[in-house]
Image 1 (cartoon, rainbow, N blue to C red):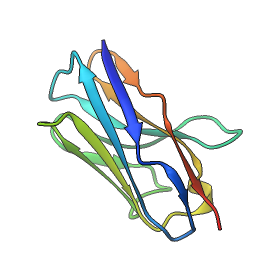
Image 2: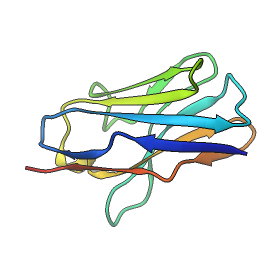
Image 3: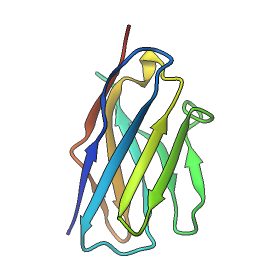
Image 4: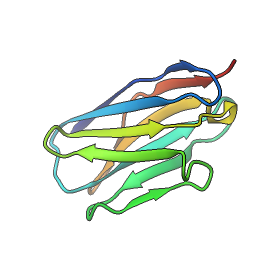
Amino acid sequence: QVQLVESGGGLVEPGGSLRLSCTVSGRVITPATVGWYRQPPGKNREWVASTGVHGRTMYADSVKGRFTISRDNAKNMVFLQMNSLKPEDTAVYYCYYRHDTEYRGQGTQVTVSS
């Protein structure tokens, strides 16, 4: 089993920044793919960003150029730096770990509002 715990969410004004963190524990096998989903209120979950086995990063078009995913394999942590936040970025953000099976955390709320 793998456990993931997100932190760093909160309320921020449009144009602001937040940095989300995710701690991965349990039977962690590296390298593995890690990333982030989000679920806006009343909408389906959507993929946001990921970093794969060889370090390649990928982003949804809606966040490209504003969000940056990074990882610290030594600490089993994943980060999502979010800049130039918009109201449409409001969502619960979930990190995930994928090796043979995908595991997700419980999520952290991000609200972008003035």
